[in-house]
Amino acid sequence: MAQSARGTVVTRAVIFGRVVGFCVYLAAFFLPAVREVATPGGDAPDVFLGSRCAWMTLVNTFSHEIWHSKYFLAVLSGWINPLLLLYLFLLLFPKLFWPRRIVAGVIVAFIAGTWVLFAIIPLVPLIGHVLWIAGILMILAGEATRRAERI
Image (cartoon, rainbow, N blue to C red):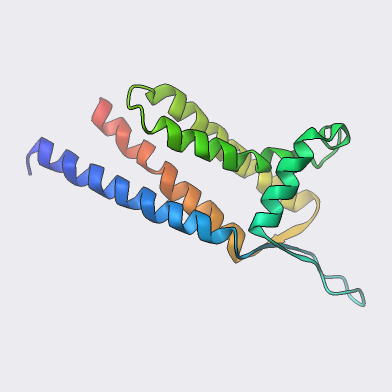
């Protein structure tokens, strides 16, 4: 296969993966994302939709007390969504390769922070969280293929 034909196939696959990833990402907001750990003899644990998690974590950005507690990781996870929108905006400008890469790296770091938060609080991730992460990673996966084209 010629180099340009291979590049076209890879580009189409990346675009397709990003579109599917964005659809999965959006669907995750309407699904149960996390629940509290059940305690024996206690009430049923609360279950939170992805949209509620996103709203609570983003709004708490402005709470001074949150930044000085273990819940600052929740605030960082709340910034994944605006950063992903910034990443998608940066895709419109191919010359902004490095800023896009940096935003993608920050997103991945904040995802790891979300999992640390789950261990600390503790929260149990549900299907909405899994799909949210899968959608984000499908969108960001194009960065890995771009490296081969730039070399």
